[in-house]
Image (tube, rainbow over all chains, first blue to last red):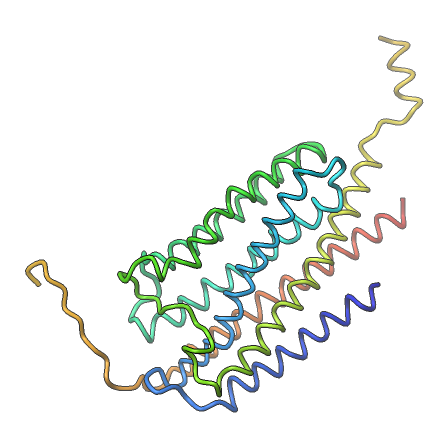
Length: 233
Length: 53
């Protein structure tokens, strides 16, 4: 199982190297943005995967609410929210860097940029709230409910460029809006970040489960101590 | 501007910009790598904790 999981990570890394080299060195510059456009090959796959992983977190959160013992689901949920946070931070930084040469500014309170920032803060808030919850049941419940609330922003991020034309951000990237010569490096990096994301989620979920087992073993009082307390009380 | 908006069409091509591309890629990869390292360290610590208990 571990070998298969590491194979997924290795495949992701290989695809990332391939897609990056392809996008950075073997594609022609874009008509107006020239070489700056190459940020596209990391920014768009990061955006797709951040939204996809956030959607997976939402599905897990709903599942947690219907599970009687949500241990594994909760670990997967917490891991997924964490990876969604990491991808959102990457997304915001890439977007800001791309904004400077193309829009003339690193940041603007534009609907797409603002809703993406809200998404990052909301998912970081889920993790923060989780750290305050005590007991596995309460931790799972709070994380699930907070994730569902945070997810409300995800469709807003996706549709924000279509809802208004008062935006600096370009419209949704699709095969019809992008030259076919750019498709394959884009796809390679999209699958690379997907595989790396899944690999990270599996590893984090496993860690969370091990830590939970450790906490459960360490926090329960020894039988002798319980008896002594009963006699004294 | 007198309350009206002016649209300026950009007709040229951005010159240079390699530094921005390098910054975006390298920061992304550093963040990803840092997270992979933290994840690995925490997983190993959790496994070691389980084996010792």
